[in-house]
Amino acid sequence: MKKTVLTILFVVMLASISLAETEKIAYVDTDRIMMSSPETQEAQTILMGERKKWEKEIGDMDAEIDRLYADYESKKMILTESGKKEAEAKIRAMTESRQAKVQELFGENGKFVQKKNELLAPILNKLKTIIEKISVENNYSYVFDASAGSILYAKPNFDITDMILEEMEKTAE
Image (tube, rainbow, N blue to C red; front, side, top):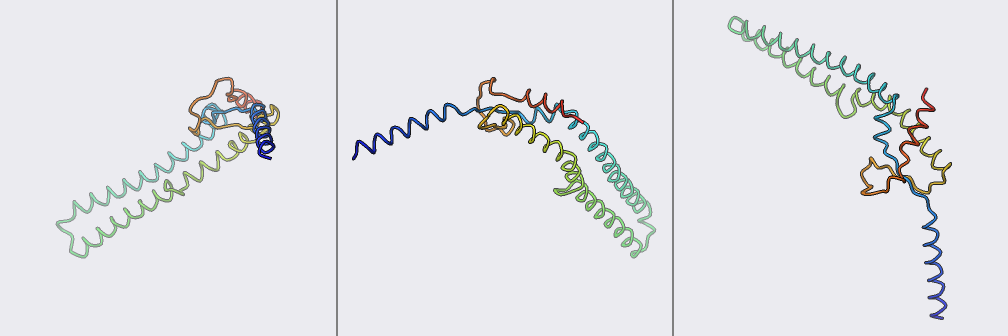
């Protein structure tokens, strides 16, 4: 009985070792692809244009705050107590409005992040589709993303980044 169990166990181990040897593995550097993609560069140009526009809005608010503060400082000696409080409240309100605008535009879920996601989503979907297509065509069992930082070493012949880049360029709109 023991010999039978050991024999079966041995056969199962040999079968799994031979199966593992037939698995095809590859990796891709999605960061390199995204940096090389004309679509990504176009998206980046659009995003930076929006960013400049939003930074100008913030700059205009800064200039208004500076103007209000300079006006307040120049008239501080002649303003009544209620006039001072009114001017200070105006400066404080504008400063709070500026902070709210910065959060709205550049905060964790601000317009900048939303616009970036909106612009990159189709490119990332296309990349995913192409990786899946090439993986199926070449019978890869596993494809890892080298840009994720989990690959410490891999032979260069397992890198399919150039293959993915070529396909991305073919399907560029």
